[in-house]
Amino acid sequence: MNIKQAVRGRLRGHVGETDLNLTAVMNIFLILIPFLLLTATFVRIAILDLTLPSLDQTRERTVTPTSSVVINILLIKETGLELNSPGLSFPALAKEGRDYAWNTLEQQLARVKTRHPKSQDIIISPDDNIRYEIIISVMDRCREAGFPNISISG
Amino acid sequence: MILNGHTTLNLPTGSKRTKRGTFALRLTSMIDMFTILLVFLLKSYSAEGQIMSVTRDLRLPESTSRKQPAVTSIVAVTREWLLVDGRPIQRLEQVSQQETLLIPSLQGELERLRSISENIGGLSASLQGFRGTIAIQGDRDITFDLLKRIMLTCGKVGYNTMHLAVLEKEQ
Image (tube, rainbow over all chains, first blue to last red; front, top):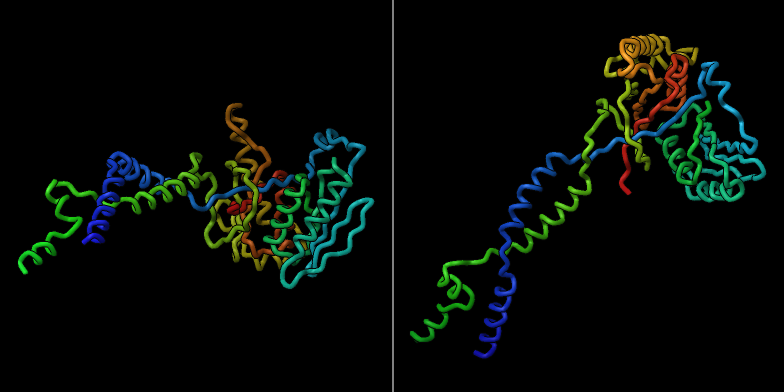
């Protein structure tokens, strides 16, 4: 009997604690959730900017080359990646299994950034049969490493 | 015996509350679920809406870019077709068989678009005319060779700023 009473007491205690008036909260939820579900976008589109050198002669003159231009070139081949930067020499990065050696590329780009902190340009030169997806992920890595001015060269 | 039966019938939780005439629903788990759902939906909520629509039969590559698209004409490259603003231009097999890098059919269509937007811009200064911006929606499996041809053609016509459409990657 003692145990029964104890259990009874505990149960009652619980009921008393949770006795909140949740009507208002439930009303808000019931309005907000359908509204947000209707307006939710699960697939969001972003863009990557890419500017070709203009063919107009008027614009060509406005481009003045600065003295400290560092041109980094990143080749994408079927077999791997190859980064060339003035003053630094990197070994070509062979593929790791089926994937490119992204981690090593990020390390190399970080080294270029420490060597030429003002450098922002990189030229990506993929082979003809490289997939678009690979090019995009290379561009992502370059941008994250601090090279936002990406050019593509065929 | 009767007393015993009486005590067993008089079960702990139910009787007291039914006497009061109210009974509390256990809403805790439901509220938990709603809260999680609400946070998730608020996180994925965007007030801007979708400006660019994705062409069918197309899987865009994923990227960490957060830049929002603008309203432009769209060159779409699906697995079979090359389209401009949803109008099919040429089959990709024919494009890749060409000797020259320039795609004449695409060039013709883009020149037509350019002249239209230049005419619109000429009507009134408040209307935006030709800005040289174009969006490229490419399937993630197309090759660079094809992309190069398309970019060259766009650049040749005067569309020098290209927006490569990508899907935002979850981080």
